[in-house]
Amino acid sequence: RAVSMAIDRAGLTRAMFTEGAEPFSAFVANLAATTVYVYPKEAGKPTADGSGDYTAAETAIGTGPFMLEEYREKQRLVFKRNPDYFEAGKPYLDGVELYIIPDAAGAVAAMRTGKIDLIPAGRGEGLPHFLVPEVRAIAGARVLPHALFQTSENLIGRVDQKPWSDVRVRRAVSMAIDRAGLTRAMFTEGAEPFSGPVPVTSKYFLPLARLGESAAWYHYDVAAAKKLMAEAGFANGLSTKLTTTIGYGPSYTSRTELLKSMLTKIGIDAAIVSQEYPVWISSTYKGSFEGLVHIPAWTLGDEDEWLATYTPGDTRNQIHLEDGRITELVHAIRGAPTEAARARLIQQFVTTFHEQMFRVYLPAPRMITVTSRRVQGYVPPVRGYGYAVALVNTWLE
Image (tube, rainbow, N blue to C red; front, side):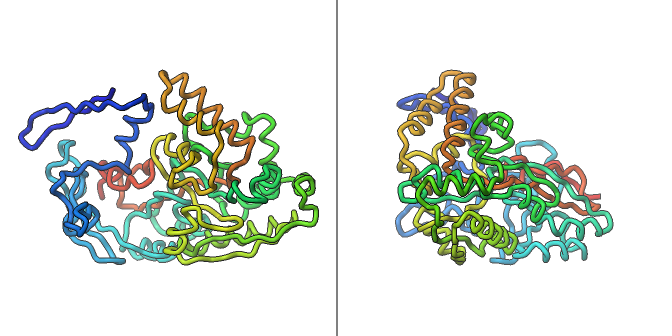
């Protein structure tokens, strides 16, 4: 049973009691997630089906530190300070202008000319590492390396279809990835070997040193990978598609090209299929694909959101996994009576995941945020999509 407190428009404190059919250990965390919102039913732009559009700029509401004042599609958003923000005296800034700059080099140029003061890293890799030397050459610019609560990019195949249903093939693909080489080529500011199936910043994450025998699948070993491929019946290799998208920028597709070259070394001839983002997000990203897919980093909420993606019926179950052990573990984690029990069960989930290599995780780069000399008090958020809250304690000098 959960209880939440709220202050209504009359200033009265009210309590809301919520009782579910069974325990749910992530309930409170999910209520506080950036993906959960509570709106008055009369709010939003009216729609034909009566559900209301709560994302329309002209009817946007909320309780955050800033209020939307102007929106120019694909150009900028202008926010003004919320005088009724719940933290007295905050935010310190009178307003924020958010510019939509499609490429990272353009953002660096805008920083150099003084048009912008902040290049935040909310997901993915933040500023591409190859641009960091250029940023460091800007007078007064500060480079802030940090970590995010997200899993890293990965390679997936549908585990309900051959050959990806064979764990030996999945392990071979993982052993074909030169993670150290990928880091040297793309992540010059540093990276963790992988982040998954829960984020490297999660207290439940198991590092390479604690994976036991499964650590072998993360070591670059072409000969061992070829042996696994032969045992799976692919001594002569195989041909497949490798789907990616231009929607995440040129650095992302460059990594896809590197993955293709690594797969070639174990006999996998991967033909790259590059999709426009609308096609990608509406089909491939939702699990409608053939062959392999290069998947981006995920920024979600509580660990439960990641675990749920491996259960039947979940809209993010891209690999089409139906594994009774995994499903039972997720249900047990949700019903865990204590934190100790939850931690033990999540560790079982993570251990099983690495044994089976359901996703082939790639290196997790250090996130790069950049501020101008004028920005003071800014601390990059650990959770993605938290720009506004991170700006509450920021001021300009």
